[in-house]
Length: 456
Image (cartoon, one colour):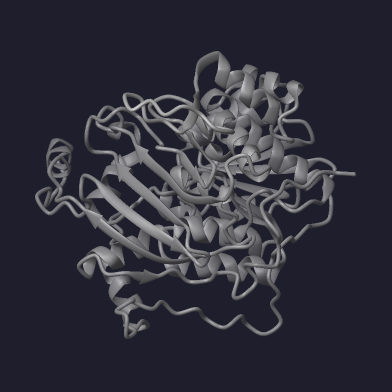
């Protein structure tokens, strides 16, 4: 089960070089002949999307419950290596009056699901190391792929997904639910309308003490992954939403990153408690910090910490020339005060801070165009991390129904996920700056900014 970045980092560095300014360069392979980019790609409409769910653990079983309530789709098949999980999913779906095909009992059972003609979209909720093999198999069999986070852990995996999506002309999207949380949706709309001026800095994180949860993961795979690998291993919850606000590959792109981490203080204790061999050789630092710069001079700070008892936070912050939005530890928005005002040297504030009822009133003026009152009510009723999971599923199916570009494409997936290996490369080289590859291969400024697609 162990999967180490370090050998992959060595391989990456063999293809990399240091420039005069000591930035470690990463290779951007030429686009294979006959391939075109997927910027703005829209597939043929699918009136009733047949979904095959692979992986029926914590995330997959929740997806089974939600997707039976999403209009425009049906669950056509389920798959898990464990027979009892597949049977439990079959029973749950049957309660909704739906018959479903079941593939289980073998590690490669997903291959049968991916070749099933009744499946249009393969919805992947496995452990991390199986994300990419299942997605590649899906696209090679003519299916769209939607992958739980993190969708890929290495640069090679990111390129494999990009190239396969381009070659097969099939969507490969990341199931990043945090892009659909209510505060983030509203703050993004405010950013799109210029309320904060120009967004110049953003912060995101995954700070979540997993000490009580390690044993819930099948074969303890998640703690094992942290034991074996260094870097920001789970960047997308914090990174994805702020990349949308920064218009990444929609007018700007990521160029360089630098990472730093603490020593592993708590990690070896967790590994020893789980009975892992070599627990003292824990690769992941307790806290990992990564700073990223964009082509247009913007910056992003990302943090990862699942090993200390900090309060849960995704650290979501947008810093603009004229305003600010922040979600943790409390929701607040700050805007530049208009006109002249008296200076109070005991209260030196040149901004207006909105909280509570005043904040709710302000945010109600910038409702996300995708969040109709009906969708919000249904999302909160069905649930899934407060409703954001349902909104994510709804938008994915809506776009497939109507033959529209997806909210998150394969380049979003690659850009958000590549942070894992790139941060490891930086750490293994004394926090050296590392180039972020352009997965669009030059098409990053074709679109004028982030937007949602709607049926006419």
